[in-house]
Image 1 (cartoon, rainbow, N blue to C red):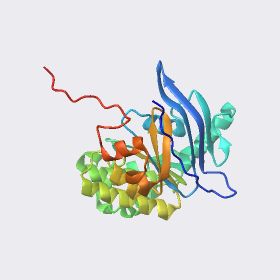
Image 2: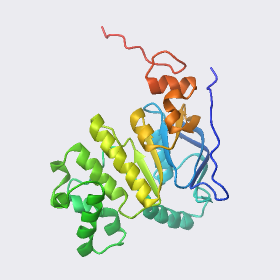
Image 3: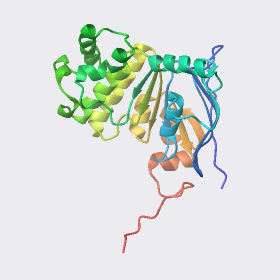
Image 4: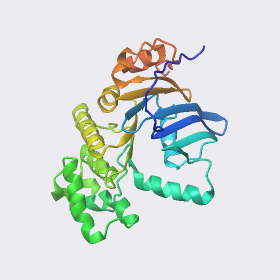
Length: 276
């Protein structure tokens, strides 16, 4: 069966997109996870990628972060291909990326042995961008931005609820005022109300910092709250792209089946037969 591909053009004027991905491939052994992903994300856009678990969303994020090398393809940040550089230039670029890119991990990924304020300012301290004697006060400011009282600064992550841990993770992501923010399943493990609160904080932080945002999720309510633009990843390729508000009415058979949770459609679904 031929996969239905639907896209719409995004205008980014004379400037190159903040992130450009072309023909990105990645396999693990015989399993091909990314199968020619191509995508443009203009500066200032809040972009959401949806798709089933195991569709390659997290692998794509890790390629963007430089944590996993793709087998082939192109990744550009502000028009510079970070995959075709000399080893030293790659180190320089990745050092810049680490400063310019903020990441909110799926489960917040806080360090259990560090206090909240140390978690929030971890990247700044590690890169010596702020002296330790000023980091605590800076953490207080960041915590307030994500709706947390500075009094929690000396607590450890284990003392926090899941929603509070997500907020701390978001505070850490925006600590260096990055121009690119990446979000890996930001509402996973949260109840719907807390998820909506986190989404609102993400939108506010993106706007306040003027960042370009890329989120991956299978939460349709979250995708529509966070995103201006959206795309669906299926079998390692982008098969649909359009406004995030069109996710539930895309007219694409694959997207419609996924977003409405239907068993019937072009996407194969395993039978839920009871085990003997």
